[in-house]
Length: 308
Image (cartoon, rainbow, N blue to C red):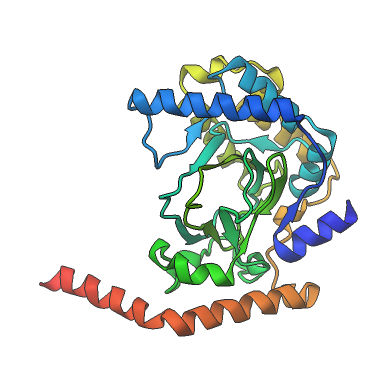
């Protein structure tokens, strides 16, 4: 576990090695997700480019997800990244990367957010990709610079992917990663559709935990009646804003230490993890040097639209 903690802090992501689902469960999971997606696309509830919300729509699917998230190794790791009594956003999703997937530009997400990604199909080339160590670069909580860089465009992924580390693996394998990482989605595999499940976790120690209570509430409302239909008390409790609010009071009276996901903001990360810090910095500087003319072109285009 100490090794995993160190790897997560240094690189911003880590691959798990524990077998969670049997081959039969994996095949059943794939089948349920494919059928569910096809039905929702035929009913015009989602498009081929949109992710599929998974909770509360199929009793067996809820049971399989519960089995994944109740796994001892998964829970131990999440307690390291997010502390005890962590919360899960209710809009858990299955993402389908089709052969014609254009990818998703490099970006960053909120401080404290940890994503658990479960590979439902083999992904030998990967879909999610990142710059290892990039989560260590920005010491300011409310600053996200990734999407403002010259290379932060899905159109450039065919070039920038050579600087990225894909989170690849076989069906049943999984990753944890901090969303402060510079990350995105590379273009689709030309041979088949790749499927992943995504679960976003937040610590109760979050400085903005009172605001998170409302966010969790809105996430459950987003699912509408499906939230009440979730076939798992564990999943309901994990996504409940009311329970999260109670856990805030428990945390405030405890001496629980700050989890890893909230220890990333520091001016001294270059000392704590120099190899990954400077490796990420050099990659980003090289990409900026290569693509800065594109950034200038974007500014010129915006000015033309504004004044012409």
